[in-house]
Image 1: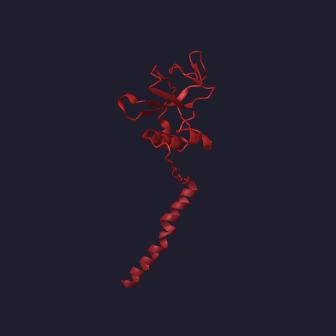
Image 2: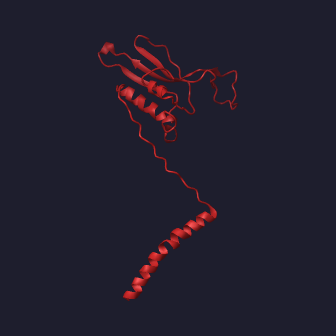
Image 3: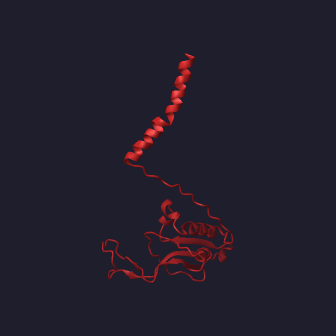
Length: 172
């Protein structure tokens, strides 16, 4: 992780941002006096980048690039010429980290929220992430299902129907 208002709270907490199926990023020549690019996330020194996506081999080939590779940038463009605030942009080589299945993993939610806050100019704003309450799921198969079905459909409603039948019979 690079040092930036987006990533500093995540690094201090000791958590990680997980980017599944990520692509390395690059920059083009630009006026360094107007545009500042900061690497937010980069791959490890042991990583490598697949150059040709048609290669099915999962091992490093001679055509691949050796890491580390930038995975996320924060860019600021000075607008002093026009007298307006600086333009901000965050580029991440992966979009699936913010989807339902991945947003709960490690610090992905915090990274996404910190990016949004930084883009809006609220760098000093503190966020309190919501607590995720996971409901446990139960898997019932075979005889357990049959027993539960009998209990729910016959045993529990049985006394209620029996009482209703007795009341109906007496009143008749």
